[in-house]
Amino acid sequence: QVQLVESGGGLVQPGGSLRLSCAASGFTFSNYPMSWYRQAPGKEREIVAAINSFGGSTDYADSLKGRFTISRDNAKNTVYLQMNSLKPEDTALYYCRNPTLNSWGQGTQVTVSS
Image (tube, rainbow, N blue to C red):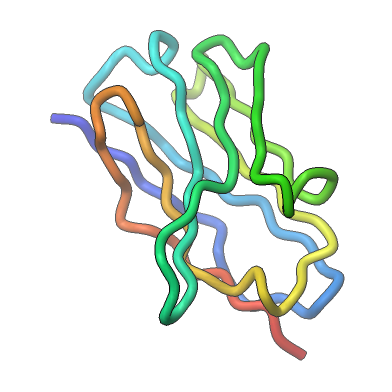
């Protein structure tokens, strides 16, 4: 069955960086676009970034352009989210999603705090 497993979250100080990973299985990874979402406490889930199946096209939430980078390694069935210059408002549970199959991972917590 389809499985998405996120990792790489944690506690980081403002201005720091983290790289999230999402390992996929149960489907032909290279055939599908992928995306990252996040949900902060008390807020709705929002899309962070998306990437097409071969990685040649990416898109970002306007507020995150320039700080976050989505990428993928189809040989490793993994999609990444590089997050730089992190702010306290980036604190959230970050989810990986296959939008075509509407499959979600369990999420990885990112906390930005001094």
